Length: 198
Image (cartoon, rainbow, N blue to C red; front, side, top):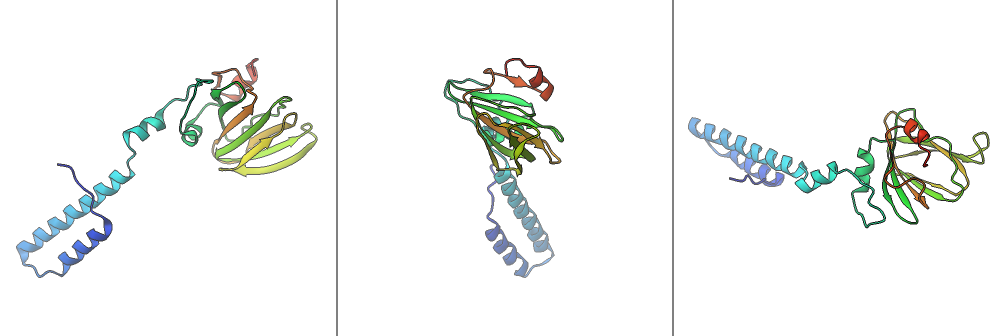
């Protein structure tokens, strides 16, 4: 038998009617049993409403694989938030590339310059500090960013994003044109620094 949730307003009306009805000792036990059953139905409904569907669970646990330039679609915010690698290429096309990044507490992407490509960066978790300029000692842009903020980096401008929060900084990056070899996964910043293909 499948339990159906009773809407909270209807449950309150039923409970109100039960409490104002005259009762004997036997009816009181029945009334208490009914109240307990109604509360159980209400809790079941709340749990069912909060439980994700099997499809949503599968989506949440899916592993993103770079299949570009083939068409692709996935829950980007969830993939970005659940990524634990320093860098994972999510999709590599002919003219652009998307990577997911997780920067540990106190970590940073590292100062870099892409002479031939623009970048779009969006934070989906954590707090960061973005710096841009001609060089590390000639910074002309310095700003704190947080969940929901984007960073637009013009080609040829040096830049770095530093995690200044108390949790990993989760972000995704769009490079145009692609910057990394398709299918690249760097588990740590040291892996990224050692990779000669980026």
